[in-house]
Image (cartoon, rainbow, N blue to C red; front, side, top):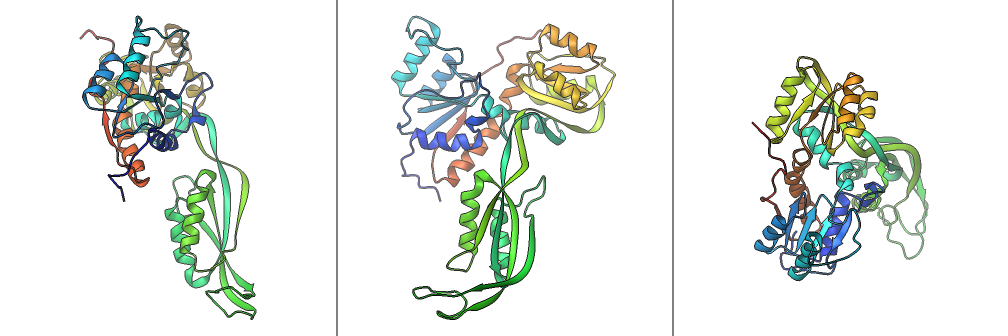
Length: 378
């Protein structure tokens, strides 16, 4: 339940944002995170944008925004002087005077589940989507809990709802063994089954399931709430298994084979960019597609190793284009802006849901003033 009267601090909102785009996913050279502002400032309205430009700041001021969440960091290259008489310094002065903070989720959002590259792959209709260049794998644990047989279904369901038992595209995965549990309720206890001072034997089910380490707290809480015992016997075991990958780019398959020219037309229609260009034989058939929002041309070797017919990205450099064509790989350069802008509406939905689940009432808007910096000739 969202309490609209509750004060929301910028740090509370950012904490939720960082669950969607964890900072540990950011590349070493990046500067994702706080750019400017007061983490203890009250926030009622948030504006999502790709860049923090004078136009975006104008829109933020006009809408009464207290926090801008941008994709590209304002302070990526470092600041040696803060002066009002240069563009970057003037913008920082204005933000501070207006009381508007800026938080950037850059490569952290690129690599995150549900981030830039996931969205790009989905809107282009790819299936069987995988991470192109993994940077991190989920740490997995095995949870084992012992439950009276009559309550096993309720505990299994609670574990599944809390996110346990995910293996690939399957959920609620468990393994179950029947056995006999024993316990001796001592003075001061209130046993759900049995009597104080008497050894009890109970038909129980050993439930085993797998969990993402990051979800340990919520999974264990859900299990304890569903379990009837006063003292619950459970174990957590660390696993060497690799969990789901997070990282840059995605690769997947189209439902049907199309020509490169047809795919380029689809990309243009979906992303609505102004400056699409592509390389390769327009008539060649393609189905296995790699994507990377922003500047992803340098990922073409990884795309080739994973069998991609074409790489869809932005900012393809001349020599990278030559190298791809020489290696027999086609490419579609749909532009930096168009391949990243697509994430903002889904991010608004994700953040709205996550904030509501955290009991935080904040209005979130997507900047409407941003446009492609290039003007294409038609």
